[in-house]
Image 1 (cartoon, helix red, strand yellow):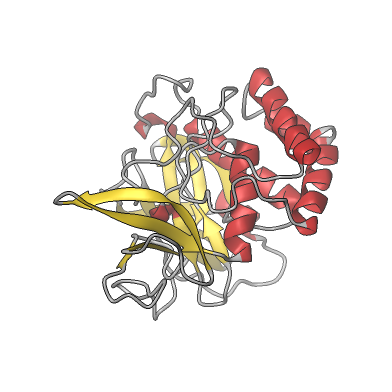
Image 2 (image 1 turned 30 degrees about the vertical axis):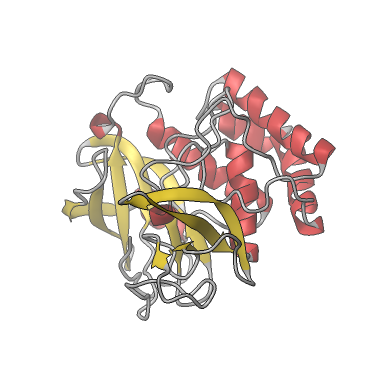
Length: 290
């Protein structure tokens, strides 16, 4: 999802713009399960496009408290910032035309994002997974090609199966670590936003931070592998931040039990030194995967 941000004057941060700016609704993103509104936002000469998700438009979920998805989106942004990786677009809580909700900077996709398949192993029958151009694919092979990581077999219709793979990409690997920390229950292909500048963002973090293990993702390719030194350093920063201002901030957004569980997940990752593996207690891959 995304539209271009206009050049800002000095002194107005993106957070200022999203928090204090005037929101003008342009339309609704209809494929979303909850109310998601595309807006323009302007403040003191700065303008941008953003996504506004009012709490009033959230559908109740059996395993998350009602009216908390917007707060979880903001909490995911706060944790991402604390790692130093900047994997989530700037996200704030604010009042808007339809009440309190989440407001997130809209990210523009690359102009050359392909609409077809991705060549993961040289087989012309490869099929791309929606979103995350060049990062996810289904391939007719038993093993991933060079530069790819296997996730698992998937049914693709007419009794045929294909191997689901994702790129062996350091940006995805960072996102896999973030998802493990925030306990992301819905990391789909459409939630990956690469940019023309080479950055990668993850979006749609409403179903995160549950106190129970809910990790469900397409990024299992590193399961059981050792964490990179960079990831260990980021987790150590996060561990310390959770005992300070970040912990206070998250305490305003998620429950005490969920905050304790977040601390425990960080501690567990540091103790094991490895990427988590599917627990078997919960479906490991979201459906549909896009």
